[in-house]
Length: 335
Ligand code: 13P
Image (cartoon, rainbow, N blue to C red; front, side, top):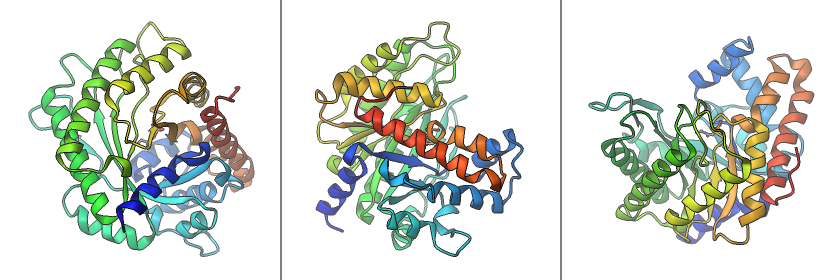
């Protein structure tokens, strides 16, 4: 894979005002969401649900790429067609989550580190064989009393850069995802400061590890107050803070910023993305896009609730939320 192809894939992931569907929940995370809706936590139901997602009629009108999970990239529809092929035929680029989730960072109470670097080169080669063209690695940063620490931020930034460099070696576009969590009572200003510090360290490490910025996508949190913060800022304040933070730290060479939804409601995530594009689309060098899991899937998953009779209605909801976010990229979303 040439560098040019890598760059073309990265641009294709954010082209035409489309965005990414994150459907890469690990089995434990998927089960947590199923459990809340009394959906049986079995491989059969996980497969049924992922088939519902990838076969959503019209999904490709709003979705450029789908992030799969190790189990999902190997699965097929009931009719025996690999999910990867279903996506490819719809013109949706298949991608794969390659981190192995988070664990406690030794010596840093309350902070997390992401695992998955061991054997990654070999795993990436297999995913390329299976049809993946991009990958994702998520680092988790927790705001609390005394956290995040520089030790935690540096360790996570280094891992993101090592992962990204291995991806590019394999011909995969790395999605670099440092997520500052919304949990807590911190203010929007605190989220701004922590995100700015995080991204500075991430881009320093990406440079140190010789990652080609033109061949990657950044997947960050928006700048929002903590869920328990008494002051919940307006949509416009969130949009302004998010764009001013990224202007300081995200190099012009990066093709796209594809936000995670992080537990915001579907509507709020779309409204905030819409406001950013309304005010700043032509004023920033990168695409302001989306890579949502919950903000696209949650309403549809609730409609489905594990009952095959609800598949069509659930797919309608998936299509609707995906389309809303495409509209938001154009500054044309209304709730
Ligand atoms: P949410 O949009 O639900 O935050 O998920 C995005 C994601 O892929 C987290 O890694």
